[in-house]
Length: 353
Image (tube, rainbow, N blue to C red; front, top):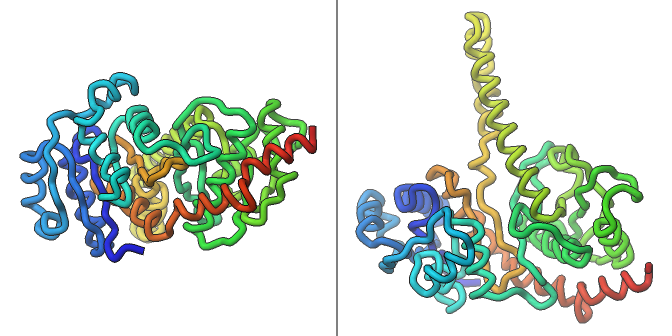
C-alpha cells in the first residue's frame, strides 16, 4: 500500500464548490494526515480557501481549470463541454493516469458517472457501474446499492451488484462472508418481478464462499440491518435513499418542535440532552455521505451536491478507506475467482432454467 493516499478533488463540484470542498477536505486531513490532495478548478477561488487552512495548503497541489460542469448539465452535454477541460474530468483523469488513488466530487451525478465510465471503463463482466453507500441501521451499518447510477437492470446486473457489494462490505466491515439480500416487495420466493426472482435463483445456485445470500429483504429491513448488503436497481435505490434522508430530517424537526412545545418539555430536554444529541447525530445524513462508484477500473466517490463541509469530509473519508482497504483488488478477486464469478452466474442460471 502507498505511504500516502493521493486524493483528487473536483473543487468546483457541488452547489457551492470550493467554499465547502476545501474546508471539508481540511477536516478529513486532520483525521488522516497521510493524505495528499490534487485540487482541480478555479485556482483563484481554491487559493483563497486554502489560505484559511495552512495544513491543507501544505498537503495540496492546485491545477487551474476554466470549465466547471453544471449541476444541471445532461451527461451528454457534460461529456461534450467538459471532456479534457473541466475540473471533474481532470480529477477522474488523475486516477486514470495513476497520479491519484481516488477521485471525489460533489458535482452532477449523471455527468460524473458518464465521465468516469467513459474514461476509466468498467471491470470485465460488469455492464454498468453502480453507486454504493454505507447506510446506518439498528445493527450497525449496511452497504446499499445501486443508489441511482442507472435505471433498471436484468438479473445479471443484480448478481453483479451483489458480488461488488459483498466485496465492499467485506473490506469495510472486516467480514469474510457478509450477508447479502435483494430488496423486494416481500420475503417470499414468489414475490417480485421475473428478473429479481431469477437473480435470487442464481445467487443461491452460485453459493459463493465470499458472500452469504439470505434471500429477499423488504423495505423496512434496510433500517433493521437485515443484511450486510442490500441490492436493488438504481430507480428504487435512489427513492429509498431520498425517502430515508427526508424521514431523518422530518424526525429531527418533530423532536425539535416537541421539545419546545411546553416548559415541561424544555425541562425534560435538559435531563435528556445527551441522548437527544446522540440521536441527532445518528439521524444526520451528512454522516453517511459518500457513495462509491463500483464496477470501474478506478475508485471514484460521489458526495451529495448540497452537503456541508463536515459531510464532504465524510465523503473524503470514504475514498480514503476504499484505498487503504484495497477495494479494487478485492472486487477483482471476487469477480475472477476460479475464472469468473459472473461466468459462474451464467452457468448457474442455465442449470436452474
